Length: 66
Image (tube, rainbow, N blue to C red; front, side, top):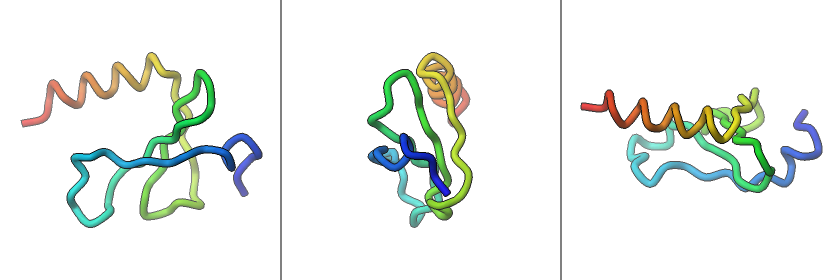
């Protein structure tokens, strides 16, 4: 069961997601928090990252993408 703050999250997928919905979604709407979930399991676990950590992860992913 999601906690109350997670109920107000607006989930979104990357505009680069083209593989039929098998992707990661991030949530908007909670200050200083970046919730992350698997789009195939929207009621499953949610990973919480700081905005700084999420920005570093995205930069890393862009750098290693071929």
